[in-house]
Length: 239
Image (cartoon, one colour):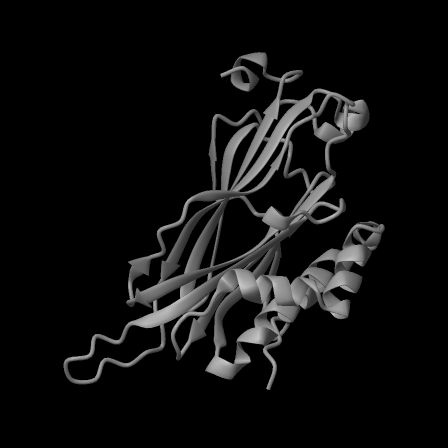
């Protein structure tokens, strides 16, 4: 049976848990015409903590598990290779951090005065494998060559973000095209989440670092949104 990331997925619009160097008294980006002064947006996957890998300890065997981390990000523009990634982590135990703290999305204005994105959606899925890890590059290439994947990628870049609720659903379906290639090894998801950062929700109003934590019984994650805006805080933007 093919993996379906839409089952039991955690969908959320950001409710910030921690903010560092934030300027909440500044005007919203919605009041800035075209957000011309926005000088940078970054989303980091700061933490993935495995609470329970669902592998029992038997005798001398420690109950470790091989895991995959699937990340996909969209802002309504054509997907690039680094916006959909699949990474393998061998021998992970309960109560163990995955060794990851990396940028999953980055934007800054280019020489053509590119408009800042009004929304960024991030899919994070942790999958368990009962067999040895496979070549993740080959798996991604296979998925990206499929007609369903290409159709979904085109819809994400073709105005789907203007329809309420469309982006998370399409992103989950895109991730499922990658995840379904793992079913030969009896893979299952430990956590799947889609987090939406949007201008209308005020997620880009606070400058600096804002953490968004999410968890279920198996995995806890933290996404960090970083906002730079020279018009509202030149000192922060140039630091």
